Image (cartoon, rainbow, N blue to C red):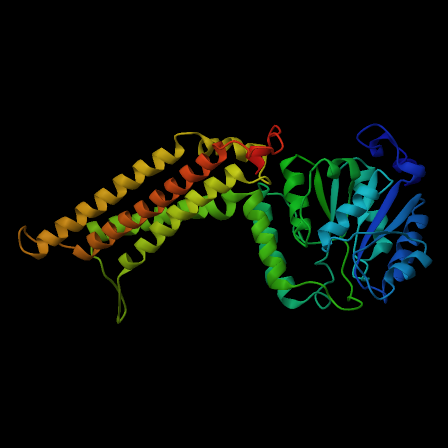
Length: 413
């Protein structure tokens, strides 16, 4: 291991070796972990020594009030402080401060077996990976909360695999990782909370980094958990929406639009009622919901994909049409056409009602179609107006005496 890790494959992006000769920096974010932080520092130090690696252990204190920083320092760690609260904030500070070309991140609560640190670093040493994830699911049947193990983590992992084009990582939320510092520093990571783990994976995949996974197990946590399941889950979904809006907005919106339109056409051409045993179901009432929701998600996803500062370059290019001058005008024309067609169908139904024209079958389906067209038109007309207002506002000059606009500033704002 010692000879391998001194190989050129582990120099940083500028051809320089780690500061002070360090080969591996272990970064541990810490918030009130007095019961466990010293044990984690000692375990990491022993693992480095046992593998013949010259390294350092960095503990990033994120506002502890229980003396965690003193315990970490006494155990031999280099302690630094991060005032901005959050798991991601602490890790970003720790990674930036690391002196070695390879960084291992973990938690300071004894959940991750830091004794297996060398197994995590090995694929990087062999130049087979740039980022290595420790899979916690082997041996975690009783140590990981049931809902996290069976619902939360699998769903987030599935979404992230889809966002990354099928990346084969099963445990996307594992916080035990090894990576080349220079590669991760170039990703421009922004997340400040637990969603940092998801952002690192998606951005790594977008940049073409080699990612692999090894099994490591998971131990019972020491101390009180800082995880907030629903709030942190929402932060992950919000981040995924911004990094890969096509996954949660564009594609679902298109599918809903297709399903809603298909239901409308089916009920127009055939019976508008389905017999399900003793129950009569009229699927036409679902059509407007699917059509309107789909159109809104499709439009919202396209706008998010174009303007999100987190989306990749390929996504920005794919949805570049949103930023063009005529996009708002085209949306308004679509809105006018949709509303006009819906009103025409409604007018025809009214004339049928007063017996001015012969009645036709499936009038309910026609009425639902008319309402869908009018509502979709309303959505696109509203967006067109908002789009024009935003564009017009952006064209105003800066206030007298204000700082001059720097390149790229107007778009970023």
